[in-house]
Amino acid sequence: MMERSSARRFWIANALVWTLYVGVSIGLGGAFGGASSGLVLISAALGFFLWIGSGVLRMLAIRRGWFGLGGRALTLRLVAGIAIVGAITQAGIAAILVPALRLRWVALPGGGTPYGWGPVTGYWINTCVVLGVWTAAWVGRRALRRARDSEIIALRAESERGRLELEALRARLNPHFVFNALNNVRALILEDPDRARELVTRLSATLRHALEHSQREWTTLREELAVVDDYLAVEAVHYEQRLRTHMDVDPAVLDARLPPMALQLLVENAIKHGIARTAGGGLLSVRAGRAGDALTIDVVNPGRLDASTSGTGVGLAFLRNRLRDCGGRFSLEERGDGVHAHLEIPR
Image (tube, rainbow, N blue to C red; front, side, top):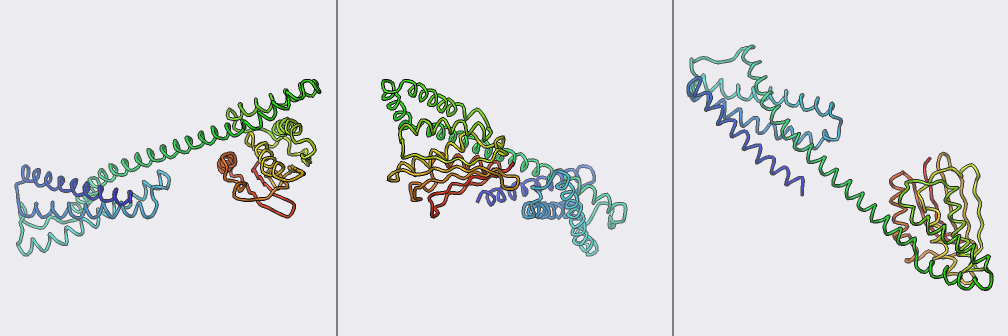
């Protein structure tokens, strides 16, 4: 719809430009060479052919994707198109003018037929110059509009990313997680002060990482595992024997990069939708390795995949957005041993 509206505006502007050009040509020709019916015919035919030719040239440029090419490729195609349209325009004028002169329907100052290799070359060059100026005008305007639209799209994407980051940050500061941790700290203060101090330290490290995650584009698996270790230590106090964990990490991928909070998000999701909803809890398994040049992470929990755990939450939406930017992949599926979250990040 927008392209159709743009085409309509172009054809109107195109008609106005060439109508003005015809009027100026007739006026200047009459002022310097004397008014004549032949001059009027030449100017009118020239304006008509250029109106059609410039419209066809624009249509070809759009339909064949010339604007998606580099500047040099676009320029070469436009120059060739201008040369061809100029030649067709002069051929069309000659096809109309020569018979009209011979039949004496029109006349030119001085009489005769103004055609020869020299004059024809001059007419063609002048036509190409005029058409080239108009072509440069609408191409430049379209390029500016495309640049503006691209900037708007980029700003919208950045705004959406910022929104997802903010929502993901809010999700990471889960009040239930914080409240449970604080209640556990309170309960441990008198029973086991040393364990209470350790829990406060672990909780502090988890929250600090959550607050700082938006300041970094990437982290290492080693750093992410340290955060997950703190997080699991806090949750272990709450779930006790219901939460069992197994880590299988290839030492060769410890320095591999991944988005901050990516692994912690999957672990938290596994506890929230798997361990917490399964009678007696279960085993949360984390495996990290390499497939080719990509880092692969699998987080398995004993839950089930339903409408509430299908991966449509804010946190997973943020993760998918980050992975799309870097060419990574994410999948969530239910198998015989539980729900598998698979993360793949190119090197």
